[in-house]
Length: 569
View: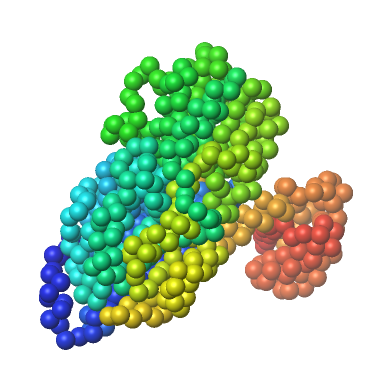
């Protein structure tokens, strides 16, 4: 087994005569918000010595109807560098930071994993489900850990989920503060506030670059405390005559706990809907983050025996994911629970950029069924973002006071707004690197510059859990869903070079799929010039396909997925 975590001392590298550098490589989490994965590479005399990975999460595509469940980072760049990976650090338990790791852990050489208590339990469940064994270490705060040339210190942070952390990476050429997904929540409902002592101490020691969350860079002020959402749940539940249904991320344990507390106050039984919601709540209960009394929780089968005003349902699928528990409720596919007038549905999360249409589609469905739907566009305090607003980001920048900045976890527009914020604070805008996925930054002592781009692509995972559904298959699925499919089979007599019998034409999902259009297609085949192409069936197929596509464009105005089979007899 590879020695992934040699405990080499920093002084070893300081004695070397070679030039020392660190390269920051984002394999995800840049421009796309989700699919977070970041590499820190240490080079000595232009030779790669150590790699430290922070996060390895999934992303959402909006292509679920094509059988794509999610995307994961492209790790092909690491294939010949596995022996340099010293460890994997996971910042918190959200899907877009941890859920790709079971797909890649063996491919990455099975390096040691370091994370917090809640994240560890969530990840153990994911590895168990994937049938993968892993070494997961629960970290201690205010303690140093060595990963080759890097020495790290984990710092308590607040986000929308307990047990979140930041990472201070010390290297021979300077320190880096990886400030992933945070807000400065002084009064979190559960758990500790940010460790301001450690944050400011890191700044006093000197930081070469701050890698900062930037998703809230467009919003003014400080982000509201997570605690305010609990009161909103109580206020909304108090006026609900039917079922109270709340949806949020299934890993948002603080939000789930506050909803459970409100349900207990109003004497409602709690039902968890969705596999991820059930798994995560069970894990949270094992750690004491959620109540464990069997008097509080029931399954969905038992829900049919209770009057609606006695039910609180907490459902996964707040981003409108196809096939999620919430999606099935909206489409009347849940066997036991139906939406009725008097029900109230609270969306306690904002859509991730790109998911807006999916979310609004569900809101429309629920509204049509008579439910009262509450969401952030029409009511405040339903959701407290886990990402810092402008003042949170400014405070962090002032505490750390780095020489350079790299905004992460946001789109290009969020990165640009972050750059504007730093300029307003007096920092040089040229010290803020705005990156796209795969673009890299080199760091040397007191300087930084853009490096070469790493080639990346989306790795699609379909509903069967298959990695890397290729672009050709995706294109075919899109064509099939929009324009239908035409299956054509012809038999050609090799002796006479003529059709042996009537062509077989089958149309699926094509408008005008009637006997008239099918006969026209057969007539076109019988009179086509493709029969003059000789007896090479592949040449005939290509020529016939071209003629039929021109026919479909002229008659139907689109191009279906066309499958032509030529049989020589």
